[in-house]
Amino acid sequence: MAKKVLSGIQPSGSLTLGNYIGAIKNFVKLQEEHECYFMVVDLHAITVSQDPAALRENSESVAALYLAAGINPQISNVYMQSHVPQHAELGWIMTTLTAMGELERMTQFKDKSSGKDSVGAGLFVYPSLMAADILIYNADLVPVGEDQKQHLELTRDLAGRFNHRFGEFFTVPEPYIPEVGARIMSLDDGTKKMSKSNPNPGSYIALLDPPDVIRKKISRATTDSGREVIFDPANKPEISNLMSIYAECSGMTLQQIADRYEGQMYGGFKKDLGEVLVATLEPLQQKYQEIRSSGALSDILAEGAERARGVAAQTLAGVKEKMGFLPLR
Ligand code: AQP
Image 1 (cartoon, rainbow, N blue to C red):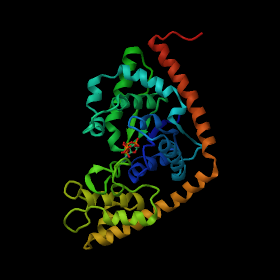
Image 2 (tube, protein in one colour; image 1 turned 180 degrees about the vertical axis):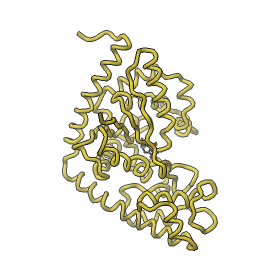
Image 3 (cartoon, rainbow, N blue to C red; image 1 turned 90 degrees about the vertical axis):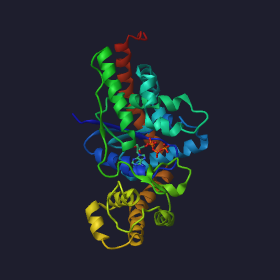
Image 4 (cartoon, helix red, strand yellow; image 1 turned 180 degrees about the horizontal axis):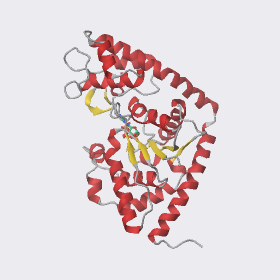
């Protein structure tokens, strides 16, 4: 039987190259041989404040980018998380199985809450909802970037805990993390991950950035001291990050890139990288515009949600039965 794959991206901003390389590229690869569920996780996005108009626009934009990047809705289920209400219900159940200490250890919560006066409880319990997202389809594989590894560990623990307490039921999922590009770093700081909610747009390449903006952002990207284009993440995090991006978008290996720019300075390498990115993103942007103007998106999302609801409702009914909820007659 085909393995099940689930993943999602938050409509919390304009998608970045980090989301593309760390997640979407793998979604496209995996769909050929697996039963795939690719959501736009709007319930996760509201764990930090979202402007309603921006949330609506970003939600459509993420869904259209999935399709533009090559996710085929004929073979993959593409839908909004909030269109499948069973996620929230299983999310609550998972929250009751999660220990406070487990959530307190989550580095993403620490990063996103640090320095804030008021932090919503949803941000704290986010990993329990993420566990529900995955377990409700009994997913085998979860393609994510490195930053989500800790959340996935918790999902595995919760699946095991449920199975131990109530009897074998959930599949314990495996992460699917790319070897190169699992953590694309910010263009203005090689120690931070590239993030769509970073207030400095120069820190990321948005998938919808126009070609000239892409070239400019790359030419202004911070680079380490020295001048050699070599892959050495410990000592040259910024140039190594740019090399990973180059490799992921050109299909060249890191060694081939190092060989090509041997004896040259950063300038030529960055100029070429700008062109590699434009060549990667321009066709994607064109498809994106076609999809947005076709008006087909809402039907695709409705069909994806309907199929997903069928699977999710069945799992939830099984969970409730195992836990001793009274059935509705
Ligand atoms: N910089 C990155 N490098 C590699 N993978 C990344 N991902 C995100 N940033 C990078 C992967 O993209 C998927 C979707 O992430 P998300 O939108 O659910 O949330 P996130 O991980 O918090 O991503 P952002 O862009 O940093 O969003 P904001 O700024 O809203 O928090 C995940 O698989 C993630 O690993």
